[in-house]
Length: 316
Picture (cartoon, rainbow, N blue to C red):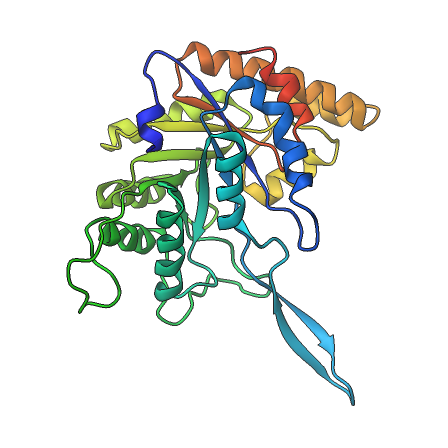
């Protein structure tokens, strides 16, 4: 079922995102993270995709070989497992990095065969040693190009132009939104213009980057509507659970932590105190967002569910 068919203007839904297990780990570790949240009847579960990384391995006789490795493989299989075990929609992240267009097409064919109808189309991160994102040869350079490829497949247009009567897929395409601007965008207006192009190309919903100041979300929503972006905009939420998040989250995700929250976290005596502060802040965030009738509250769990459960149990 398409994600947009679940959205109800009179009800705020619950959803969350998980990470694939590290290579070599059992899927049971992921189930252990999902199980405590199923009592809240999530409308969908996002599954991230992590592109390859390169490691240097010593070569016998001297020197090093640069080896490609994926630390968290299995997104497509995990989506199928989640849908089979929990009877809930799974939304795989589809990224540009590390894929050419033929490989992207093959992944989409696999998803269609499995009955997965929703994807979140993302550019993906740079490699660690890249200053700027570099697409694969014959790969999609950005999420807009990726959206166009998915839309082509929805219209029965594949990479092999000679295919006759090719099956039309039925993907509902989501994209990311950035209430505090994408890190690579020169300014907010430019970011919104690019988002508008993605929606015009076929994106049907937006899930935002995490934020800790609801004012940023409401201002972003207003700017999107003024720009003619009228698809549902789902707020992304994360409970802070460690003192280190005060330093790490703004650096990694290019977002601010409001001063009142930052002060409390700075003064917290330990991680347990910081966790309680973060949960209380998140509960108030969610209550305000729910009162504003947002489409859903989407939690970034990082595959650790206890803090999300503590928050959701107070708001649903």
